[in-house]
Image (cartoon, rainbow, N blue to C red; front, side, top):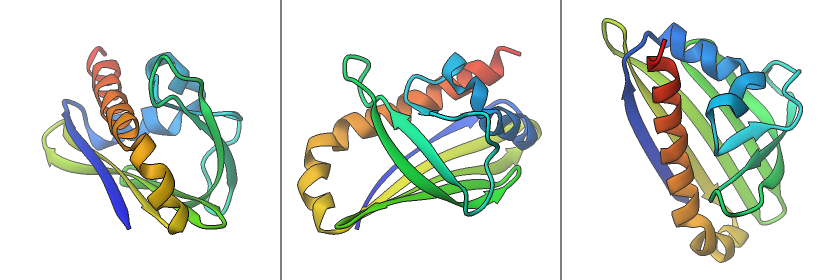
Length: 144
């Protein structure tokens, strides 16, 4: 298994950060890495979602389907994307680190024999995209 990880401290409460993550119809207004192709449906456990990532602003987006596994308001959101030979598990976690301070954690875990083939080609761009999303989330929330 291979894991990509990023975190950032945001000057806002967990509830404020969660509200922005939960309003996926607004993601395109602040997020240049990840968006939901059908943002009208709220996140719910065992729900299929169609997502796209822009690993690099110069690239085209990559579309994939996933099943939402965990929705814990104010705490955690995760989904799993699988095709034969490849599994990607995506986690967004929020940790309270003080009064109106939240640690935002974005983790992606990849497994399966195809991950050994594809990951070397996308690892750096994926990691930079995750970091970009974290910075954009922080900037968006802290401007209010």
